[in-house]
Image: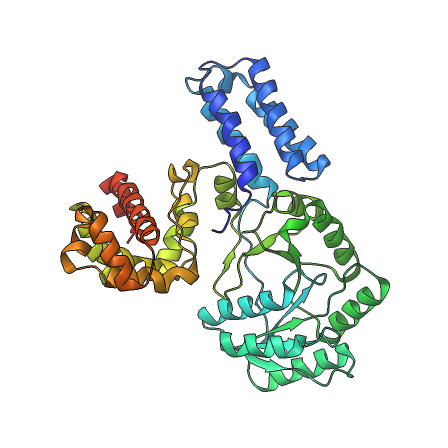
Length: 441
């Protein structure tokens, strides 16, 4: 199961706020104690200590105002202040790519080796293609074995054009020729994937500058691994000094990332985080919204992202039909497998549920390993139509028969039924108003 971004930090902060809510009226001592815990949580998440110090000072100043302390809901006021300051910390609002001017718009991706730069180039290409742009990918990495072939495959998958030259060619020459090819072929956007190193060095920076000077990029974007924490800030500052960055893309935000990079890098560098990437699929890529990320870190869910994912993945008629079924509290195993197929397009089911306020604090055990899909469908196919409609009737003997028919074990059948009943219970617990607003399938 994929981890929710910054799960540990979210859990710690949720605990702090839970204590605040239990106090009713707040004193200055209460706020000091809460902010001390917030400070420790942020430092443990590898957030830059200067950023933490300034953040805590801002929150404290606003929290100690008479308007907050004397309000009927002081704890909620403090939480709102923390949320607002966290949003500001991460850049305030989403910053779109600059694709203005005469085409093709030039985007150059920089970064250390292992940051996921080449995969990110493919994801960015697909994202732009979905918005109607004609995109070309250019590989300037002549050092890493198979780097050019990897980008070529990603170009094919994303529907983008591709250009590179022999590995013995100077990367700046490849960049210049790639730009000309994109221009004469009427591409709207050209994305350059540059070589990375395991660490910063003069040779790498010199090459980055020569590529920049060869193509005059509209956007110079650093791709950084979210797991690197404060180290990401140091890398970003070094690249900004040498090539002049315009933005950041955070990768691996679904990993064991502690949150330090997302909460530090925009403040430290003054450069916006433009996209966030997770997973290996080309679709696992989204615009970075500081307000939504703050909500997720603070345990408040992320309804807007969930809505966007649903709108992009679900058939409108199917969604309306499922909405009617949920209102009637009808949800069968046949519906379950149909919806799992649709949800699979969006990512982890557990992570999607955590985007819903309230569910994000629950221990959710409804995720299904992608490798298990064939087994899941085999189990359901081995059931009778009545069993699929009314799984409550499946007793021990029925489970043994279903397991034999699907080539699985009884415990596999039990696991599926547990996941189904838990998913159904949580979906029925949502009010009709929430289901209608979220347009959940």
